[in-house]
Image (cartoon, rainbow, N blue to C red; front, side):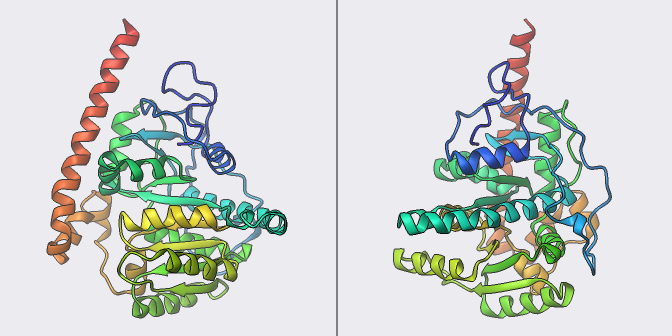
Length: 349
């Protein structure tokens, strides 16, 4: 992650003065990467202890730009920095980052008049990282690099939450994950007062139509400025450019990308590099909210068993992901834990 080793480091790989808001500022404005650390946690400010966010019918001013984000730990899991947000603080930070990006847009438009390339300087990428995402990144250098250079990585997967608690026992970490479906709904709720403009990219036309109906039903003041169901194949360079320009013309503040892992993570990073928007990879959130796919019961989600529920419904598509991806993730966490114990023992000696 950009600047993850930068502030107040007293020993290799340990960051002592680093917050998620620093992370965004450094990664977007400086656009440079840092060497991979040992994955130790940052120092911790007081975390949110509030209850889960509800969907307000009339959001208040307090939900928008006047809110200042709490500092949260940024911890390493398989070499990827994960911001240890809970559901509420994650949604509020995404809203604030979208507003910051929107306020910077006039300066970008001025630069465009001076330089043709200036208009294609982007906003920020947000990735929701589950065990499969991190397992893929462990063997894919390109995916690993784009996750490390993202504006924000969130723990989407109870196994990632548990792994971080094991690997970073001295940090005050939340006990629940940040789910893509809930993040999308929460940002839509909070964004009504802020006037956030949303763009939906992914899935089929039928799912997008149902998704927009449901979002308008829940959030009548939300602004959906566009939607696109792209081809189920890699885009040509011309198609990619045309898609980017179509989104740019809508003035979207948040682009929601639901293309499946790892395609959505790659496309989210590409869009964030050229669009003045926050681009968020949200997995199967479109299908869940549109009602085209069932979600696991709450108790299965809490106990980290959602993967089993999904596997029973889509065994042909998901068996390989969960068999090999979950195994690779567990193996990687054990290796990181052992490395940290060895390093700690050497430090004590």
